Image (cartoon, rainbow, N blue to C red; front, side):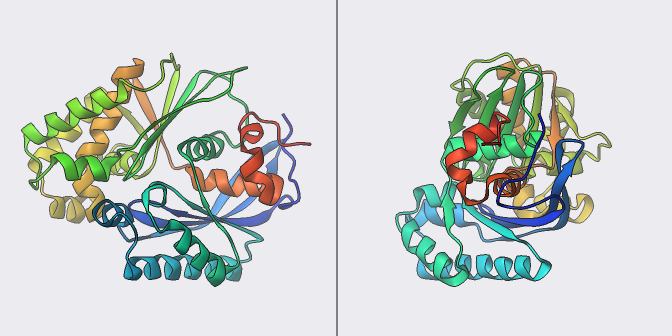
Length: 325
């Protein structure tokens, strides 16, 4: 397939994506172009601000005024910085906390007034498809691929295979919500860790059937587990996850922050993330998960670059590798 940009850009332009999730609001600004018919993204700025919106929505059912104002302010700041760097297309997306917030439309309207850009509420399916697009850079699947995104408030799995439409499975539970439900101690007790593992296995057993040849894990759980284990290769298998559980059971979160460079909020949720990663290995009989830095933000930048503001309606064809037309 030859990748060609649409109205959203030309080779070598700059795009930005802002992702409002359960744990953080995350900004990615990247140069995007095509080399040898394959799309590439080169990160120029990648940062986030932790607001914990998922926990707030779990508690309140909506975003209180102070949380809504903080959300709008963070997005507006990131939009301004994106424009200052030269981003020609800035895509705003919201995931799990906004799917559950009763007043999401109010905050979306405030974002539009403050930035001039719409905040797109992603379904589980669209979130998974953007993540797949970010991992594959718009290329059709050449093998049976599983991509798993463990968020704070939800988990998405997408199965892709040559000649087949992707199959999406979604769990309305992520590392933050699972931790809140089952963990009280720091470090977590072995009883709590094994409870996380049992619940993760139960949740993953309900996911779509498939026989992937390759598994990819995206999101903060994977990258921080690699940081925890100090592994050179970004790969997680059952042996490494067993060692991660042992380290997490014996090390307080503050010590992980000081010695392993793990973010404090992430440190407290890593046992849940490891449990979800272990469960997907078991469910799909995979030997290992490759840990990727790619995410739905890369997918959002690429989608907007290819077809401009038409990307929400054309996402399925982009994932299938057919951006022209």
